[in-house]
Image (spheres, rainbow, N blue to C red):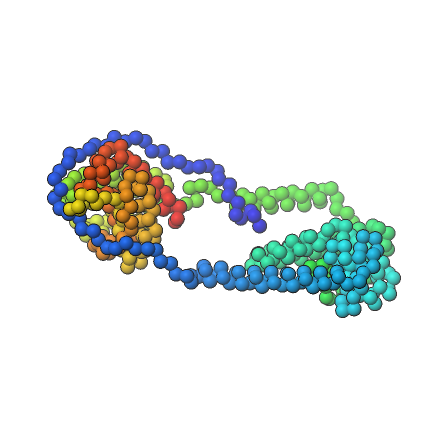
Length: 428
């Protein structure tokens, strides 16, 4: 049960990030203002998804099994309250409604008429005494509780049958070894097979696997070689289970493919020296590309690309995510902070929103939070993959500009963007 959820980590992959020298571009006069787009949004999730329906169905069925379990337990407790007689460690409770013998801890429930048959009663009492001494009731209760939780697993039902059958093998063997004639005992087992009812949560003498019990009674003991082979098979089986349950960090996941778009370029300078800043950031980020995060750039030098060319490039590459990096600007110099935009009507809008929140969160050590917003930008509307426009602070704000133009801070931003992409990769 536990093997499938165990994780054995073979290694912890840590990306190697080296210090990279960044050139600081000279300030230029701000040429235009970026108008704030969209509105602040909150994540909305549906209350009724397919997974939630399955979860509720599982809970309903599990509650049904639990109800049955406690009902059976209460019925047995009521039986233990009846008048009983003591036979060794057993408390014998005579009943009229059950045609078979069964035990619950040290309580033995047996039909009054059955006690008239001396051979039967002697075999039954000795048999149930073994169940009592071996604490088989604990096994029965345990497997019943497992069924309440793992009812959907067919192997649990098979284990239940195998556990009960094994109890009977043990009780039969020790009963015969106590001195009861094996042939008389075999006949008693056969006769008891006609009585099909057994009190739930009890160990019953008339467990139906008659043929298996008779065979086990009369077979010879296993040789040392046979026992060794059986033990080896069990060890091999468990070894295979745990090997197949192992997880290998970063080896069983595909690389996250990301197209990084350095905004503006060439004749389009953006806000002040925006095109140089975002180009430095994207080139630094691209140098961190590895087997975990594969980074592809729309431009790696100061060149002009139209929005249509950028969109076509992104759609051709079919990445897991595209990220367009910008620096913001406003007439009010007190406005500052990082913000992200996504297209709310894109088929990947939920993924884009989740990724945008991660990207913004990783920048909050340097910038204030302006949140995630919706926008109908051309590059967001016309791409066919999850996409985000990330505004890394305001060049019109003194504090934000100091961060964006400082080479050490730029390296920190690039590293934090890479860490964001690693976190996004974990969600794939």
